[in-house]
Length: 104
Image (tube, rainbow, N blue to C red):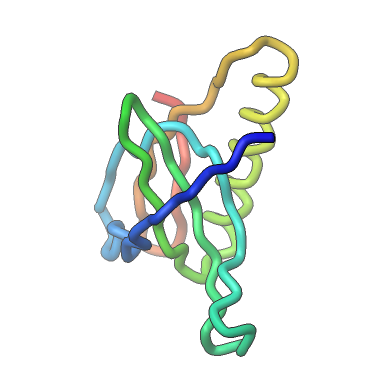
């Protein structure tokens, strides 16, 4: 058994206005932080890893972004199982209404 003791800072989502863009690395985890199990304390998050950096962001309530990131995570899981590698480093751009998640 492996025990992992993590202390992570949850960062605010950095792409706040149309035209904002960034490279985030590999999507390695997504989830719901339960807070104190009160609805107002819960939030969704995404974890990115690249090189030696590991970063967790609180996700905005945006269905399209969450769907695209979860598809990238699923692809990374299958790639790890089948080929012992990751495929999905992501670059994200915020538009007026939507986000675009692309492979660089």
